[in-house]
Length: 262
Image 1: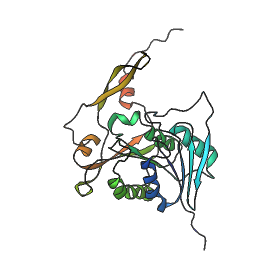
Image 2 (image 1 turned 180 degrees about the vertical axis):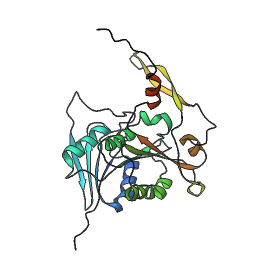
Image 3 (image 1 turned 135 degrees about the vertical axis):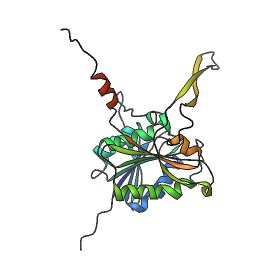
Image 4 (image 1 turned 90 degrees about the horizontal axis):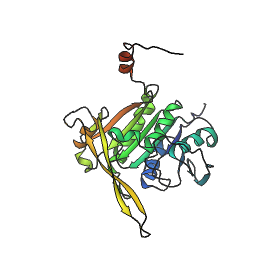
């Protein structure tokens, strides 16, 4: 009888290799296969799909046990995934899971997120990928809901796969576990961050600026969005695709008349 090969699962994040969210994710996912973690050595939040081009990227093995190996990477979340796939793993991973992020990645935050940058990089490489986040930025965030639901969401992906070019952006609300109404598949909310730069002065009288801002929801009454789901005690699951083409834009632009001058 041939022994079935255990799935190889790559984990990463953007809060750094020592973040509680990542180590919670390891405990959730390790029953499902052999885990290799490649994550930034320090926090890399907001790095989106950034890669390191102007300096070397270094990797260090931190620990290795029966089915969990952990590496730290000096680069970004996407650097971590690229290095894992190209140099560190014995084969292409069967799945990629990123997180658990300390803080929301709902709505437009998905385009800034290093957590989702890692998941999207996996998706670009044909790997079924998920990004998990909890709406709590604190170092000691409450991961109770993630512990209760993330495993089953991951198992659904294992058993049913995802459409080509699609990954999942999963956000958990911060409420008592018994208040969770369930999992809601929904769309990304239309909205923006209204940034303000707060002017400050350092002890040497040097001027600097600190980014602040608030999220502005353009459709607060829409009930099919991730922001609505989270505000109403649901876990929000948004399928994200990597094709950025505006197909409606193509239809409109076909009506334009172009004059090419050489």
